[in-house]
Length: 620
Image 1 (cartoon, one colour):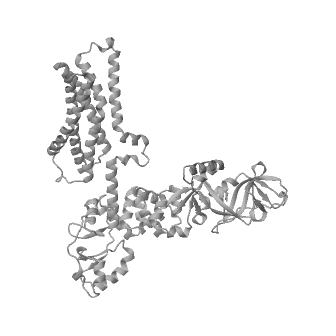
Image 2 (cartoon, one colour):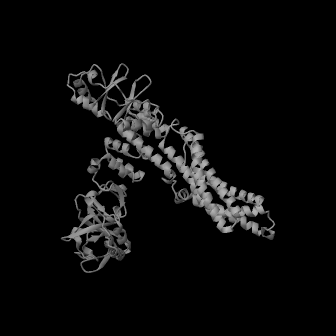
Image 3 (spheres, one colour):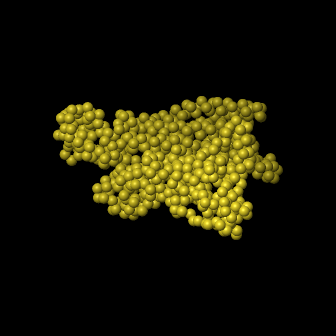
């Protein structure tokens, strides 16, 4: 096998054995499954570029040099043809998309095969071997041998040429591992996965090769934060066409994220009916049933028969997002019943709608919280839930796909709250933030140790080495030093208290189900007393072994126990404040809860230890 990286820079010899240049590139014809090399590009004297036909003038390539079939004076040079691609210029080190793995990868090398004096491209090497080979073939072999010593294999990761295509020669940095036809055949969710890994310019180029229907479905599958960006990057004419093609609820979500002026321009470019449906949804609050519902609902009247309903469904099915249920209305769209498709198919054609309609309805109001709506649909196994106003007028439906998306979003938010990971994603994420959040107690502990040693050093630097200080100061400093050693116990106690508060936030219990502040503090206090007794005993034993003074040890043990109890109670108070803030729809940060609790624990323990020194000096 031959690799492009090994060909580049090799000498080009004419029929007389005279060196006339070095290989700079090879071209292939793109119309074949395994395309043959059609042209050789090389650099002649003074780095002058030349190109010649491989079939006409190349006699042999032995892996070390290209031998031409004619002397240099008889060479006739050529130009790159429209159906030809240069491997080094257009493919090597460029991005392609692996449609099987649904990921963007980089071409690290290109693999060719020789047959009957012809070179054919097999595919692109996108794995580690291509990188190592590009540095040095010897390095690749060394790493492969080392891998074998450890019982593993260094695989070759090859994507065949028939899964690659050059979309546009002028934007050749974008390569797709599918033909244009196959790109349309992919599921929109798969295309969305691919687009999320591309740059804005690359995404726009892909959209230029999708028809409106495929492009609209793909945008609907993109992550929310990318949808508005993609629309914003397109021309206003194309953007308005795609939004009109989308389901109104999805289009309204995107329009709502765009700048007001651009949103208005796009709405004016749409048809009156499409724009009106989207505007009606924009009037509802975010994260409500009205905000996620679609106004496209299949309705029938009570005087219709089953046969008439089925014929009606055939007429409107293509225009509806879903027809899991048929809704029965009267007058001005007042909802009176619902029919499932199963009941509709099992009923006789001449059966009246009133005979099979279900009258006990599950409904939601337009201002109901979207999470409550999704949970209601999950509880009752509903594929769609009608949204009605206070008069019972049918406004739209929330479909199961939107409900699942809501539950997924809420689960992600709960997880981010529990782990504090919300600030560790995206452009603002940093290693420092990640380490600080997960190891905050270590930094607080180090700060306490440093502060204690700083005070002690300044005291010793004073005239007389601080010997003239009152006894309660000296005892206080001695106890704070010991407290600094035991500080992790208090810090982890504080962190545990904040974790319980976060757990309550995640469970989402209503105000009626939650304990009152007094009951909460009593419960936390009982737990705190048990933990305080244990830690106070440990502190007493530690200082008694160090000093032999039971009285000093008792004072320190009491200070430790009291600090633990106050920390636990403070955690209960923090939990109540956090829950009330959450009830008011204000953000709550688990990292801030944890940090506040640990800072309180550090301050209280250090302060009580110092006060304990004063108490001992008085008692002693």
